[in-house]
Image (spheres, rainbow, N blue to C red):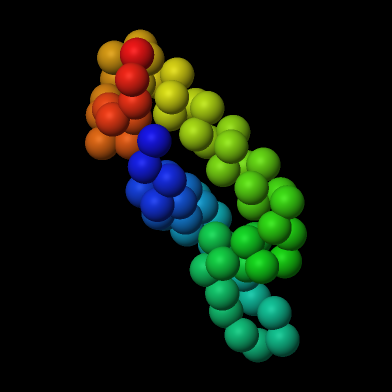
Length: 72
């Protein structure tokens, strides 16, 4: 599995689905805020996201760039 690509896809999904986080007048991307404020929640969420993408891949719905290099 291409871990770097998974991290990029997860960050993109978070940033597209959630609004920016505002703290003390500053704005942060949701992916960065979650990763830095609650790293465990970030990692659990990414694992869940990876599982959903893997299920789609196994059912023939794409993501070859993410899982295609794995041996069957």
